Structures are given as structure tokens and as C-alpha cells.
Length: 279
Ligand code: BGC
Image (cartoon, rainbow, N blue to C red; front, side, top):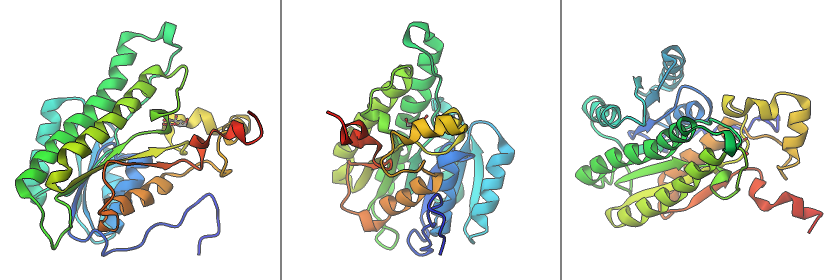
């Protein structure tokens, strides 16, 4: 048993997603990497999408294949329609179909609003929001074509949109990022509503502060970490595995009746911790 409270135990259910084909975007690092590995550990074949850093993506592929499933790396910028169309078509070609999409790729380009450039605004919206739309659209086309295969899953397909606590918590100095995640919340609900009758389950995960390269400044120094911990009632910064474990369960048939919801995995960050002693 793993006794380190900072390191949650991985889900180890090799049969849970057996035979399913998963695409994880932005899977060369952070939450995407941990999720891709966790899906493989649970029996899925996995496409490891990355925008840059092929060696990192190949290392993730090797970790996944150690679980006896298939994996390969595919470079694509999720904000580019042609590249997304090609990525999903290639996956259908190589693996036969797609059962699971984790639309995870995302980035930050922070600036006080008065200084934020249009390029910073557009970059974040196009990767975080348009990228999720494009990937979901292409995956859903294949889900609709194929329909339910009862031996594989009760659903015709599952999408997880990687959101953030900032789909509800306003975030000064990050207006592009918070707006993109607010958009992801409505993207998730609208897709879920539109495609539930086709047995397609679309849900979101909203991570809180997770130790990844995207927010290194927020946890790297002891001072930054202390001030971050004041925002987290559960008393620790999250790990990529916290999100990966939740993703495995959410895409599995254990959650077959979970449709259009956002699962907050945030140690209580959205519970207005300031009000525990104030207000
Ligand atoms: C952001 C992180 C931030 C966390 C909590 C995430 O969505 O990417 O930079 O630490 O939210 O504020």
C-alpha cells in the first residue's frame, strides 16, 4: 500500500477498458500523460497526441505498451482542423475505431487584461476551446457511424473535456484561460445534451491545482506552495494521477449513467475556503 498522501494509488483494473481505443490530446506531459498511461493500465489501446516534444510522447508510448496494450504517438496541433481530421482518420485506420476521447490539450498565456495581446487571447481560445470542439466533432462522427458495440461498452463513445476549476472561479490576470474553460463547460453540456440520445456520454473533469509544468510557479517555492495551500481545504496540491484515476472511472461503464456533468477533482478548491472562517 502506498502511504505517501501526495501520491494516490493508481487504478489497477486491466479489464475495465479492455479492447477500447482511446485518444488523449496533449498526452506528452502532465495530466494528459498520466491519463494516457492510466487508460493503458486499464486495458485500452491509446493514441498519444502531442504538439511538440516527440521524445516525451514516445516515452509515454513505451510506458503504456508495458501494460501489454497498443499505443503510438501522433503529432497534431488540436487548433488546426486539417490536423485533427487527419489524426482521427489515422486512428480509425490503424486501430479500427475510437471509443474514448480525452480532450485534454491546453495551455496558458497569462497577462493582466490591459496588457493582454490579441495573439495571447486567440492562442488560448483556439487550443483550449476550439481544439476541444474539433476533436470532439471528429470523435463523435465515428461514434455515430459505429454505434454501440455491447461487448466493448454500453455507450457508443465517451468524451471527457478537460476543464478547470476556472470554469466557475473567475481568475484575474488569466481572462483568456478562464473564458476558454467557461466555454468548455457549455461545450460539454451542449454536446452531452445533443448526443445522449445516441448513447454518447460527454462529461468534463475540472482539475484544481495539479502539480504540472503549466503552473510550476504556483507550487515550486515554499512561499508559493503555502499560499496555494490556503486555497485547498484538503491540504495538498493535486497530482496528475488524481485526475487520471478519475478519468478512468468516468469513461468506464461504472459511470454509464453519468452524462453532461463536471467532476471537480480539486481538493475542495471550489468550496469557497475563505468562508470556512470568514463571511
Ligand atoms: C490552471 C493552474 C492553476 C489551477 C488552480 C488550473 O486550471 O491551469 O495554473 O494552478 O487551475 O488555480
